[in-house]
Image (cartoon, rainbow, N blue to C red; front, side, top):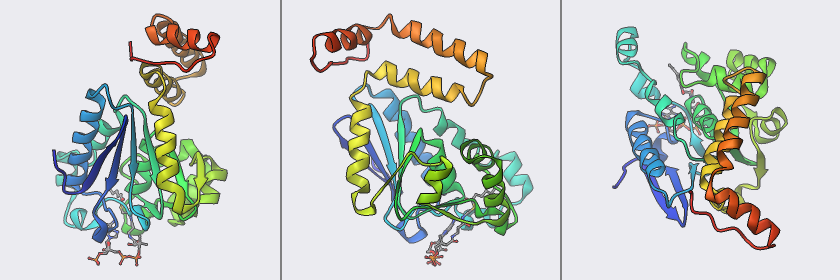
Length: 257
Ligand code: HXC
C-alpha cells in the first residue's frame, strides 16, 4: 500500500513510519490519521513485524493537529463527527510502538508521541500543549497522558501557558525515556526498536498490557492482572525457550507461540 502522508519502511522486524507532511511541519490531519490506522492495523496483523518506530523530520515530529482543517469546524460538526475519537484506535495497537522525536512535538504532536509506549528524544526536541492559545485545549489525550507522565504542576503550567519544554526538562519530568544527540536519533531509535523486536513477541504484548494497566487500575487489581499475565506466559513455548537459552548460555529464538 502507498501512503501520501507517511513513509513506511521495513527494517527486518521493525516497521519504521515517518510522518511526511514537511510543508505543514507534519500537522496531523484526517488523512494522516487514516493512514496511521491502516499502518498500525497491518503492523498488528503481521507476525513478522515486532516493533513500530514512529518518527518525523529533524524540524518537527508533528506541530499539532492541523489547525487549517479545524479552523472552520464548529461544535455540531466536532460533536456529531466525534472529532479526534479515531486516535483511540491508534492507542489500541497491541504490539510495541516507540516514538522518536526531534524538533517540535506540539499539541497533537506531543499527544501522538505520548500514545506510543515510550519516547526517545533528540536533544532538539520541544514538547508543548499550546492549544489554549487557539481557544481550545488538548483534544487527543494530552490533559490526561501528560498529567500522568509529568504530574499536575508541570502539566497544568504547560497547558495554561502553552510553554514548551526542551528535551532535558522532558527527561527530568519523566516524559521521555532517553535523550540522544539529534544526528544519532534515527540510528539509535532503530537499534532500540530492533532490541524490542528481538524479544519474545507474546511477552512484549503482555509487558505492554501490564505497564498500561498501572494507568487504568488500582494497585491490587493491577498486581493481580500482572500476575495472571505472568502465569499465562508460563504456558508459552517462548518462555520454555527463553529459560532454556539462559541456562544453556545461548541466544533464544522466539516464535511467538
Ligand atoms: C497546520 C501548521 C501547523 C499546524 C505549522 N503549520 N503548524 N499547519 N496545523 N498545527 C504550518 C504553518 O502554517 C506553515 O505553513 C508551515 O507549517 C511552517 O510553519 P511556520 O509557523 O512558518 O514555522 P516556524 O516559524 O518555524 O514555527 C514553527 C511552530 C509554529 C512554532 C511549530 O508553526 C507553530 O506554532 N505551529 C502551531 C503549533 C500549535 O499550536 N499546535 C497545536 C495545534 S492544536 P505555511 O503554509 O504558512 O508555510 C492541536 C490539538 C487541538 O494540536 C485540539 C483541539 C480540539
